[in-house]
Length: 351
Ligand code: NAD
Ligand code: TYD
Image (tube, rainbow, N blue to C red; front, side, top):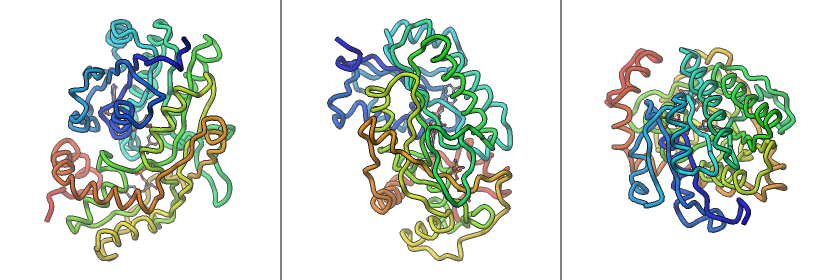
């Protein structure tokens, strides 16, 4: 029986974060009957961005197991792979916020580069049958007003975050080339949806607007991002795992380019809040102007395409954060408080 036909033992790293938790919920649900897991181990260090609460609804599933640990711990990773007879790894664990990487790139180099290398070495020894490196379109750098990123676009990362992801991607590529390692790389545009840590644009602005705090728009607000609902990204990653070809790269995007200022205005409209909350602040150093993905390869080779319209997805996302105010508040009262103070010089207590 081939790898694709039988239920697999899967290791997910970083499953307590935003995309990882949505991915685990998808795989343990019944939306993808062709893609079955026999067991799923979630290895997560629970950094400020990892939250066990994100997976309370699957914690009792007999197929699911949580292991608290660091991907830099080679002994632990080796043990987890061996003891659970892991067939495949989907690697989400990362430091993921560009602004933090500008303040201090060291954890980005450690987790994103050295952590990926540690995982690759252990996965190679364990002879896993697939390894999906979940990466970002930011490794391609910045576009001008025209054009799209394809899988052939040369890597030209501009932030310490994207540089660390590009380095990890190149390690995966080199393992495929040198060791015939069954690695697959996925590169996705900006995700939005439930369980996103409220330091990223959409959940931060929803939370601020709700509490009548200002929305800090960097620079002139004309930077463009290509927004994709997290459920579409997760389905893409699942398809890359089961149907992708080792050694290949697949781009995923939402076909939804929007200037930050337009998105901010849309959010204010949905929340029925005034535009006077918009506050233009100093630009992010090295701020990439535009990201836009050409996802034809994923469409033709994986039979994937984004399904959630931005109109529907954004409304549902706003509703989710409004309904889960206590989730956001619990998160915001912790580690994030210190960081926010450092960034903006003001505290986060709602007024
Ligand atoms: P996130 O910051 O919400 O979650 C990261 C998770 O990784 C957390 O649960 C954290 O505890 C865990 N983690 C961090 N360091 C670890 C370590 N050393 N060992 C074990 N676990 C560790 O990130 P996210 O937004 O869910 O992104 C997940 C992945 O997807 C990342 O690799 C990111 O680069 C990529 N990605 C994100 C986006 C986006 O829009 N958020 C877009 C494209 C790609
Ligand atoms: P972000 O959510 O941090 O994702 P990324 O940097 O990975 O694209 O930011 C999305 C866009 O929003 C980006 O152009 C930076 C901008 N931005 C702001 O204008 N203000 C903010 O407070 C944040 C967090 C982001």
